[in-house]
Amino acid sequence: MSDTAAGATRCGFAALLGAPNAGKSTLLNRVVGTKISIVTHKVQTTRSRVRGVVIDGNCQIVFVDTPGIFTAKRRLERSMVASAWGEAKDADEVVLIVDATRSGIDRDTRLIIDGLKARRRTAVLVLNKVDLCKRERLLPLAAAFEAEGVFSRIFMVSALSGDGVEDLRRYLVERMPEGPWLFPADELSDLPERLLAAEVTREKLFLNLHQELPYSLTVETEDWQDFDDGSARIAQIITVLRDSHKAMCLGKGGRTIKAVREAAQAELETLLGRKVHLFLLVQVRENWLEDRAHYRHWGLDFDV
Image (cartoon, rainbow, N blue to C red; front, side, top):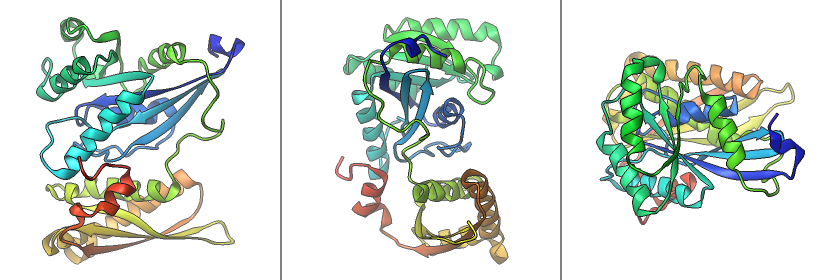
């Protein structure tokens, strides 16, 4: 238990920033202790803000998983990057997660460092995936980041295994300001179950589709029915841009969509602790990426 347990309550926000695929969502799931943000090997998986709540003694930390920051070209990408910087502006602490297996400071990470300097923000640096690196590479890498002059502390962690994560959490606990808790003690995330269910299905689509298609699809939970036996019927719509994309989602003889449904249904049953009957429908809407309603649904600014 933290030393803060003896004093007044503390509560604050820690925004997780990083280039795409740096491991932000894996770190969030690790520090919260359960899965609340989808994780894939593909970049730009996180589209909207996902909050995870951690309690340590009298301290409550609200971790915010943000979309990856990169050079954005399309409207959706610009909205995602603007959302990440917006969370950083409002956070008590900014945590920059870097994939330590990459050589030096890559272009996307340089973009973030320059953005921190322009906004006069300091950050906690997390060198992630250190379990995949030789130790002699890590010290020069840490020195290169320290020379940038924007990092208050540097941690070396493996979000996947959990090594070093507890040290990071204890440090952030001591940095949180005094104040009342913002969430109930038993609440791990502010992500609604309907959105969580849609995100789980989207993750399974990402993992089963190897073309560029995943970034041109969205999943929405259209209907949710709870039954007296404790089970739930969840109906979702997968929206894609073209008929050819629909064919990819379905797969030959419907094999792909069946695999997605089975994997998503199994994970939802584990997350929700109940029997789930999942139904998926794939539809084509050529202009869905220009629909303001989707951006509102994700908490993104359409007009960035």
